Image 1 (cartoon, rainbow, N blue to C red):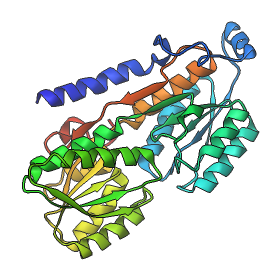
Image 2 (cartoon, rainbow, N blue to C red; image 1 turned 90 degrees about the vertical axis):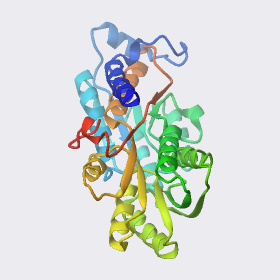
Image 3 (cartoon, rainbow, N blue to C red; image 1 turned 60 degrees about the vertical axis):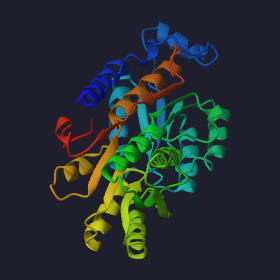
Length: 334
């Protein structure tokens, strides 16, 4: 109970601090440098409408839809115009769209890379154009290009899933992993999960793993193959909730009643599933796209107006399961 109370307090604290992103005494003058004309606009009592780009992995994912809505709401209140492009998990398309946004004259971009390595040429183009880069959710590989990063503690998200599995399956067993190596956030979650289960007194064995590209359809296909080849699997660790929904569908079709499924996000779909008495979702490591989106917008404003800001912001994560799902509601994000 104490852990649950602390988790709720942490969410409330993050929410209270979100609107004050510019007030923290961090960052160097170089980090916070603003163009002379931007400073003059601020002295005149505001800034003229600036364009900010928004490019994340896949706008079919409810997590990113929520993040974009939260970001847009803050920007509109501050007089910015947000232009969003959806690469649909296609790294080449993301590169094309980013160049189009540069050509439109964006001052900054909120960016979550489809591929954390292949995004580097776009980062170079953005820097050459003087566009400030606010990296969200999953890190790019070349972080030197980034002005600020805002995301969840992804390693811990996977770690708490692994520790929960040890508690639920003290006898160990076979594990399957549905991942996405091109997304560093998911890589960190899987690393945390694997390091957690390595601490079990009775061993877990990872017998199957597959790249889902972070998509529901691929997760469904790959988990079906895994269950057919390894019918003794006791748990499937999924890189996000969208993947977990795909795994849940295949487990139900296969009638694999004892398989436990873990996700990361705390999405409304997974929380609704946790309310069912017969669900095989064991839990989800919850994060808040609302807080991340709000913080990203506030920090972008700090950068463009020459105020101090946090260069790295990591949101805490916490486990939502059958026991506590009622505390968080199922109709929206926490």
